[in-house]
Amino acid sequence: MTLYYLGPEETFSHRAATRLARAGEALEPCANFREVFRRAAADPEGAAVVPFENTSQGPVTEVMDLLAQSPTLVAVECRAVPVHQHLLTRDLTTPIAKILSKAEALAQCRETLSRIYPGVPLCPVSSTAEAARLAAEDATLAAVAGETTATRYGLVLRRPDVQDVQGNTTRFFRLENRTPGDVHGAPAPLSPTHALLYVTIDDRPGTLLDLLTPLRRIDLTFIQSRPILGERWKYAFYLELLIGNSGQPLASILGAVRSVCREVRVLGSYTITTQPSVPEVSETTALSSLRAMIADIDSTLVRTLVARRQFRLNPGLYVHAAPIEPQALAKAFAAGDATEQTRALRRFYLTQIVPRLAPAGDDSEPRGALHADTEAIAALARRFRFATKVIARKRVELAPAIRAAAATGEAEAVEQALLNREVEEKVLARAHDFALREGLDETSAGELVALYRELLLPLSRLIQVYIILEAR
Image 1 (tube, rainbow, N blue to C red):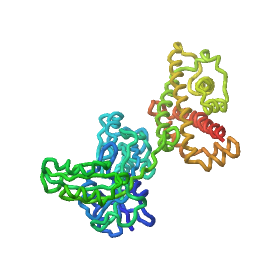
Image 2: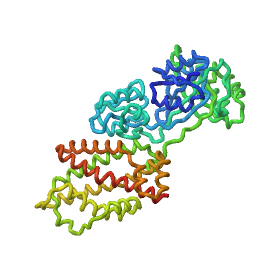
Image 3: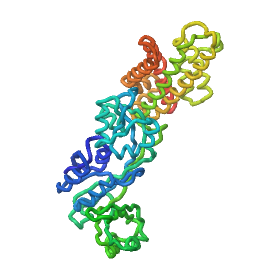
Image 4: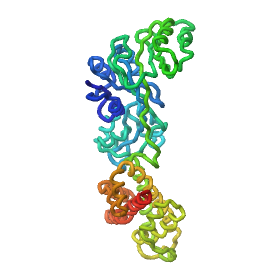
């Protein structure tokens, strides 16, 4: 038993196929939709998964036409899958020359991408996965694709959720072989609530009204016209009916429709189920998406710290700042009291950050230093507050390890459960690249990386530790 889909792996069709596959079915990628239909129709035990409609771009017309041309393939199940389009690149700093994806994916993100990257051309390729493969080979290329595609091809999320419409969703059909006229065949997982009809009518005034009149008491959830091949300016209609609430059997509905149509075919009967959407960012945005957001925060933070290095220490300005332990600062951010966070962060910054950034002495005009301090403190606050969003996701993805560590009540055990040295090394490498981009030499960039390693990253972890321990 084989389930055919538009490949390669990690396309949205592939992800839908994994959800619509039956036990024991092998998933087989195809190069295009025509091949999907051809191979599924030729395989008596074969089935196919194809996208039918997107909430922002409408129906997939190629699939509609192929469905009408494939009399033995009918829709037996429908799954509505939330689609999150992300901008993926090989790294976070190389300028983007082109943005690649399947044409439909680019259309779903056109306004957002043109606003963020004006002038960067959008170039269609055969699939989102193919776009990711090409981006993995060339750092100047970006791909619009799903998050699992990034993992598969070793890419990073340059910009998460670049689709124009939040709540973007695509409906996928599972198609199976049926003898012409047999729309039910083997029982589907759920009793059908919808039916999809393909109808043609005579070209005369009032015929469309004649078609719709027998359906006036039935919810019409989808209607679309398509040209009839070989008949100039003649159109067929696709009608999706909500039959589950009509109280009328499908056979009765078909009888009424056939009396006014040239041709009526049932393209499928199915129930529409919805794949759960991704909850809000503060709770469950995928950890890799949050890391992409942290990259943006770190870019700003490094810039502000580099700017502060241009001025001297000016100790006379800060004689009233008393030292503070990192634990006290972390507890202030874990508790969420904005006033206490500001007070604690200012003391930490002036007594532990500035002395490592600035040479001794005073500036003849200290206003520039004060302005740089304000910018740096704001960037640090944003970095530490974002740690509270990251831990919300870690509590989902690392739940067993975190629960076991929290049960000990020991901060060291919780910190060890949260520690990911591979990710932290990537953060340090990125900070180094950002520092070089801001004009620092290798020695100065190394000093800034040491600041990250010895103070900023441990503090971010410590904030998360106290949030976990408080939530026990």
